Length: 116
Image (cartoon, rainbow, N blue to C red; front, side):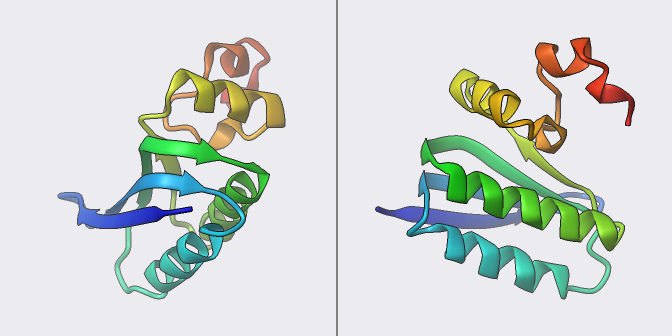
């Protein structure tokens, strides 16, 4: 169970976390710690979590991303999951977590979820 988390920045002061590997019960604490430390950063404008290289995503991993999204939203900092595979898009749709996706899935838009 391995996960690599690489950090980059955007031109507007946002942070990009690139996840590479397995996002599950064993590695979710790493993500939680990383995002928690970022939320303590001054002048943070956004967090994007790139999941293009994620090979496993379980319910603990999704839960960690959802909680981070909600905490950051309450702080006025947008969080979005970017570059999801078809599997991850479908998984987020099934569990009702489409609001995390940078570009909502068609199923999400069709249900009116994009109007929040």
